Image (cartoon, rainbow, N blue to C red; front, top):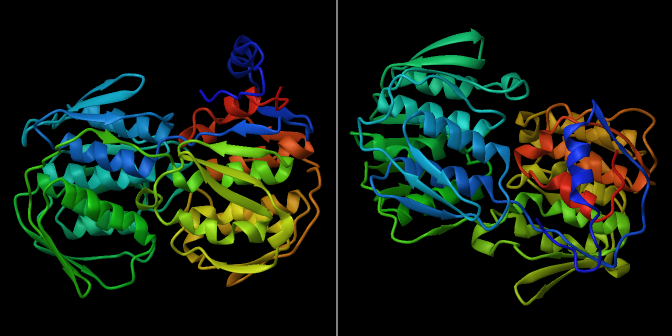
Length: 449
């Protein structure tokens, strides 16, 4: 847990009592008096962690993954399904040790595999099962079960997998058979995870594969991360003119893996800083190569009235209204920024967000849910292909805020409530990415009951 050098946390037993006895909602009291500086460390990057778990699961040698940052439930869900397939994972406080399986040595009768809230795990796991000829039922929580997996299902069916669906193209579904493909046209317009899953699981294949990409890849930094990890562990692939040729490879991991902080959550400490006019220190902001394109926010930091300083390995965020202005920003490569960025722009000088089409494919229709959340706090947003955000005053909501099964929406609502006060659904959607989110706020002095 992060420690604040200028604030002495209350007895954590009170916090534990709060969490163990919480009802249907949290009550926040308005509070705009915080320490001059707070510490906000990012949780582990689930994009890095989940990819490394699937790679390690296919390695015959042990893999050590260092975990200097907290871990969210999506990572734990991924680990749980791999363990059920026979992968042994020793979870210590600061490192995980993974013992993968030899080909053919996985548990081929796992029956049911619970992916929790992790859509990444569903896509990677389903293709992993198909590669290894493992028959299983794949399911998830209520939020995940409302997401459309038609592209994944169609891809698997093209590869010879029989899929028993209980609810059209939604979870749960049962896979039977082995993936049998030499060439495949992969849809990449809505998500890059299908192409990533096909590449990451290639060590489990016995055939070479040619992948055809007919569209520009959405969320390209995540695809580039996949390529980097495959090449780093021994893959030999050719990538040109919308075509990838790849062969199975024996995984070589020659060093311990260190998981960086979750770059997509950088907007949350920025929002806390902006709301409460306090300095925020982030000690584990990832290097540019690990930031998955989210370093783009640094180019716009002054436009939302903040400053960014690197100091001895830390990033310091502070108030600086001198450069605040109305601006345009394309987030097609960073779609997860839509909700917190919209709020930051609304409490600054406003602006326009473009490249948001794929936001409808998230845990909620995040265009619609972002607009609805913002309206509850008095912000004016309009959607006309782009998201048009007016400079607005922050007002307290008049009703309970529901998270719609969307962890990012819930975390943004909670941060706004630390300023206005109010009620929010207490179910821990935020725990999917950041188990320490509420604890961090509590220990900084946020009033929660």
